[in-house]
Image (cartoon, rainbow, N blue to C red):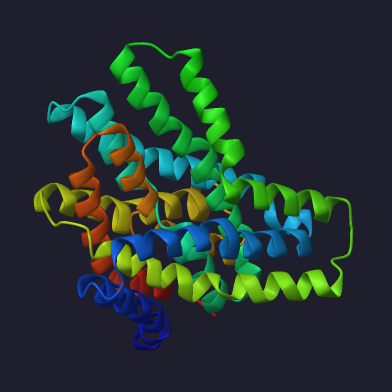
Length: 309
């Protein structure tokens, strides 16, 4: 377990470095925003495209893994929604809490970290998890917030979801890479080198951006943030483990990767959605900050439990 902790420590150290730069204002919010844009639209997209274009389709798509992860994630999503309902929260606020409980930082933290810890064979399962999160649950929160406010699901909401998916660079890069792979087109050496160099900036850039963005997060509503962090860091990976290890068992390696991915802290884009719609952004902010801090210990525990190579 100590070895796993030491292997994950450099990733969190870069997050800490970004946090220090943000808190000291050496790296102001404007710089963080532009770094995040660079990673999101360029570096991470190059990494995702290269991986998808060079992997066989069956190394990425695994129907049982997808369904197991989907049901496990839906379980913790439903639990958080039920608890929010019992506390008397409205549908939009309950949706934000459920998103905090179920959606982890798979793109910026999970993909680079798990690819290094588990080897590049982990990329396929992690990309599948990322796709489910983006397509299913990022759409669901938009439906619940708009439906809760308007009392119905409008065509405008569906149009908004569709445009959002089509404009998401992660979805576009994964889709383009899968098409490239399906057509069996070899990646020319200059293009491969370009994608490797640009994608190489994704890991340090993403981790530093996570830390710098956390510098602006508040720790208000600590009790709620603690509950949501418990859901995300403990209950979510356990729900997924029940599905992929026992109820719908899959091969040991992809099961271990998807459980580790489920153990990641709350994704930063949950705050972006909450702030965009004006629904409990402080609650999301506190959950991101607290879960990221606690994940320094919990993520190595789960990775050690599932058995990283």
